[in-house]
Length: 607
Image (cartoon, rainbow, N blue to C red; front, side):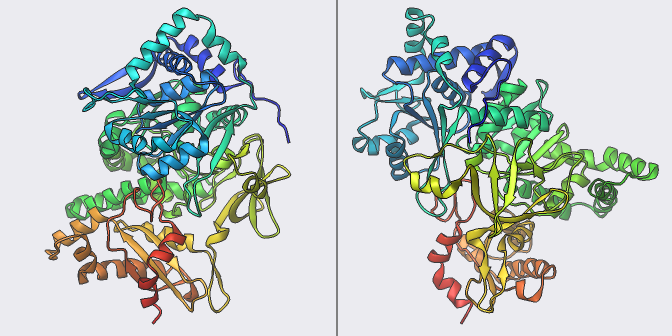
């Protein structure tokens, strides 16, 4: 099905909208980054100039319309300059996870026929240099940070500063070329590639058009209540569709300010400094915030613990009213106001969320109790649902339409249907163009305009969508009982001591679980109790730690029927990062891979 183009301020494509915003906003702040301890501002005019220089510089180097530019970098302004520069000259922008190995980089560059590759620094440059002999389409490599590369000489490699200079010179010689190229782009043109995390095989390149992006920009920005006064923090990988939307494309509508974290380790510090008004994160981040407060309370005085209990209790009362659609009494409002002034506001300030009017959670299921805790703090948190193949969001909870445990109602102009097999199907202008070089996979995924999400769920009488699990993850026990493991796993991850969990039990007599502990929190627990350990493996083997996790498992077991309880568990005794095969780049355990790798360990739970 072909949908009419979305038009925003006369623009039909993201590059047209970008250039309109550059002209309109001119000296307004577009973004900030921290340099030498000081937050430095970048205006829309500077954003536009740098993006144009990048785009024209790449044209001068040989980039043609429809060709791919791959960017391997942590989040920074240069990422956005290159992204918008690529789109401006009709190129296709593709983000690469910084944790990817050289082998994965080779696969992505071959599949996308990358012409220009962007490497953040010497470490990332090494990855592409290692495989470039096997990449015949590769034309040029651009490096953002030349530290350690001053004496490096290679005809294929140039710095971003050289690219700016080449682009500025090209603009002098061809002053109309940039705007001519922007005008040539069409809504149906391929704009960006987003590679799936590859939990069930090699990553697939999802092709997303300007039409897809423009529809989401116009649809989501009003829902969030996003405007030019808003501040946000960019820290999730920009090659993920959620962060790309929130940090790059939605601000083209809203004119909001993007603040880039200094690095992955400085997120807690940077969020307190920026105090964003809009904040989107994956459940693991929300879990870590909750864990930090929970553990601090254990060290608080009796009076402080009592004050927190009283204050959060007042917050939960108001949260219940919000969830039930009822109005609190004047006394309940007054009690919450006092609780907020005396206690809760300090907690929000500690988290860096004291100014936030919108908190979003997505990309993975989140425990309903966790959302309820944030609501009790007085923070509006909304779970949203969607995937790369529908360019981000398909359903969302809203301030006046909210149901805990659901992923909300269908977004405007989005159709949701449940198949006979219980699979959630989506239709709308946000459904992607298909998978690059994989017509068979595309045909399997989109039928008659309906996107087959691979998620199982239902729609209740009020239109709220409830996801029960991934189709491929449903466990059928030896006794024939169908069990959806994600709900059990989410409750386990609500513990401050459990980072992730995979429930096992398909074709087996009972359920067991592989658990990844929260290294930092469990280590502190062990130190506080003087538990001896020498490394992570010995920490996982300590009796006190095993007893701690067993208590957490038993707490969760109380919430489920006998057949759904965890009968035994094992700890994954190695520290995993996104560079390990067990984890996706968004730090989710790969169920099928974990089942295979730890088969021996799993079998011991069934002997």
